[in-house]
Image (cartoon, rainbow, N blue to C red; front, side):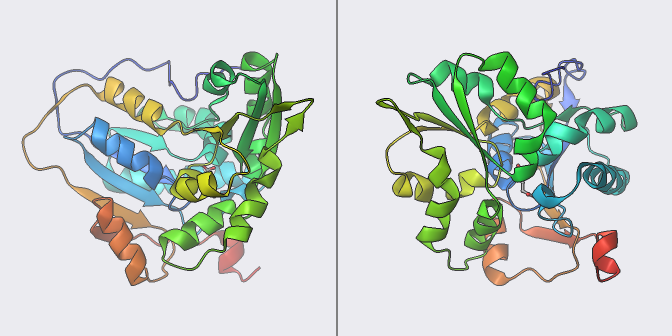
Length: 291
Ligand code: DGL
């Protein structure tokens, strides 16, 4: 099994200096915003298209074959409309499955987001690591392979959270999210074993850093929370190289469901620099037939 999904080691930096590149940051919903803010900081000259496949959300519940088909279909539409120079798959649930198919289909570089097991193994002192992710990411062969390769000497607890991504979406939309609901989703991360306790939790869904401050407050004891977004942004910046800043960079958000965005979400998106919003309707086939 290859573990180069995040690094995208098959790519060399693009030819330099570039005029303003366009970076596509893609997720099933709003979680990729946690990656977007780091990418924007690392690549200040780039145009950004943030694409949320909210018609397909949550990806964590989709069977693997359906998820591969979905991401390829959405990416086909997005690349032909926005012509990105590079795409960030800001979604662990998709990256741990779909990157080989994306790289086979499209010519642009793809940078993925996968569970930060190697940094977690380097960080732990107690040997007890928890991987907090969607049920899809927890079930992937790819995730198991990462653990065997990088954390074989440690005890890794896989926690498949069924509601946490949706709770993060609610919070960003200004809807009330109960502390108990968050506490219940993260409780299994905290393991005690013969006087040792979990000391590292790897945030392996891009939605979760959106709730980080609340998770820190609700945790039964302090741990190191690992968010891979800065490493992803650095990889993107290394691949693109410095941009020649000719015009002020532009940013926009694209959503695949035709649903109206509520005002608190528009305000939150504007806070990420995404004041311009487009709807590119792509209903999930099962939803459009009312299943
Ligand atoms: N943000 C996605 C991830 O990183 C998951 C959310 C979903 O289930 O769609 O895995």
